[in-house]
Length: 395
Ligand code: MN
Ligand code: MN
Image (cartoon, rainbow, N blue to C red):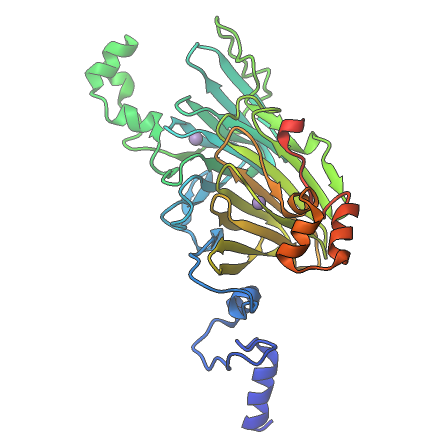
């Protein structure tokens, strides 16, 4: 093959920043072709993208991995994604028996189990305890300030943690080893009424995650509190919830209405089938933090004043949408797209563009948008916009 032919092959097989309207030119490099292929809509933005819109996507693949015996963690906080001020996320893996040590923090912790099973423990301010096993598709919520732990069971586990503060770091919590290591030994001795040498072997620093044996059954680990168990569950079986099904997918909503302890984080688990999309909408209460579980999609965020920007997403990515900014999420792949949308709120709320228009006088919509009767008729007939959520106030 001659050099000219090789060059032609190269240009025909890699994407180039040239749009169908002829705008753009070839990228001569240096370049990362794999990332360009993953980011089709950022590499060649739709002609409707314009203005200054900050970054609203970050991949867990681009984060620092904290490796320990017993598991690992990585996080996307305001340090990775500066616009994400309301929530921060941690992706964590625990081996069979691996423990996220006894700790607490100033933020509330919401979690979604991605794979496997874990045992969670907590004690509240009234001396009541909570010990439960969680499996795939289950949530848990630890209110701010309450101590807790997580331990992987037989098959280990991986989960997503979401905290109600973008400045959170899971590497900067209050942990039991750290407190012991930084308390004078005579104080520990006086506090527990045991000799100082009891503490000769305590860890010198925060342990964070450690490898332990797989615990026995939950019955074998029962601890009876004289004050009883916490009367409202800290866990919720999200996949057991019957979803709202629409032709384009499904949605499960969980907030303080059906999961009362979750007073500061509301969420929706969304399924969008190939070819479908989560309709044009916005949220009238809070910013949205997204986690992509499977598939591929794109989202355009409309920021007003002529500004809009399109981002591509795939499993392991985090997306963000500021309060009230318009957006949609379209499945751009061949498999089903699954993602979580989360809000620092006690309730899930959204406003559907379709519903708004359908419930506004017809003449006004027509004259405002210069649209014909086809759209107005379609709006009236539309029973289920592609993925429409009911207001959680209706439930
Ligand atoms: Mn925690
Ligand atoms: Mn949304």
